[in-house]
Figure (spheres, rainbow, N blue to C red):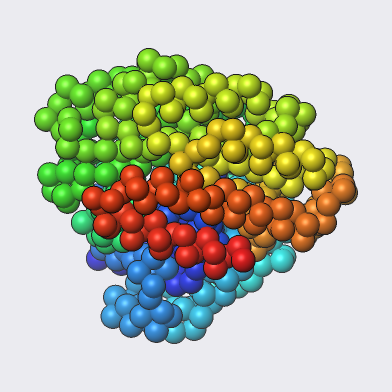
Length: 478
């Protein structure tokens, strides 16, 4: 039986399972790492095809390269598949080279960074040991790749969204986004995943990721979603989602969930149906979940239903407190829309996680101050502030070139260290200083600290986790 090893390599904590954001957890103020669903889906597909699979998230279990060596020497894989990010791609390729010095095998690597990339940029990367780069949804191609490389079945040119080595050169297959049917996938192979590694930030309880949909109809210039997942929203059947929740609860003892969708609330009828299925089931009152949302569309009726079904947090990308910036980034919302959505969420009694972004190429210090003023008006329960990162393939990448602030290709960069020189009026160091000040002034307010501690007096574990995140905030920003 052919053996396939699926892994996240050792190193800093990164959101490797989410091609859209690829958040650097190590550098973030309030984010936590999500489950390795991309590997879990791939494992399930490969097991169904009769392959022997070894899955390990070395980064989140804080393992070392020596741990990888022991597993490789023991398992002796015929193929290794690794999930990478824009931040880590160079390090991950070097990691695979080191592994191949110990054990020669087929090596493939997946990441949004490879989505329909200009082949000339590949000369900047160490691809000597790589057979194939996956730039699309990995779980839909891994089985075909394994069949080709290990069973000599099929043709690489027929596989969507890959760049493969042919005669010593890399060539592309067609890149067509938004075509895959999520309902065709088996549930992630959680029996191979260390589910205890992925926890709800406040309580520390295990939290599973449930993929509910992919794609977003919005046109935000900084976002990779329209590029890699398409503008049409692909949704899973409500009953399939419920069955996966049921499996997680009954088989793995998991009662907390992240409903992963580029925008869960964009289709109110669908989101409402998911909530109704939970409310009218034996799981009602036993599970809780968190979702992502845009400020539009969003209704008080849906928020009420989310709360009733068990929603414990809503994460919203407000991005900016300046209407000119919101217009230029094609957010499809105004500052007034941001305020209105935040007020509705608060009235529904659901804790709010606000995401904000600064450092767009045209921004001035006063524009960034507008964003800080919005943060304090909204007063979310938690915030994360990112610096605008022009990912290759996005509209922001082209805008940064137009404004003359684009740095290098972007390999090795993220929201915490973007590949820009700053804005037209601010240096990169000045933007970083403004970001740190916003975070510290928000989180270190006596009223905020008192509210969090007083509201959790009967939950010592929650207080402990708040303290841990607070110390991380101080370490990264002072």
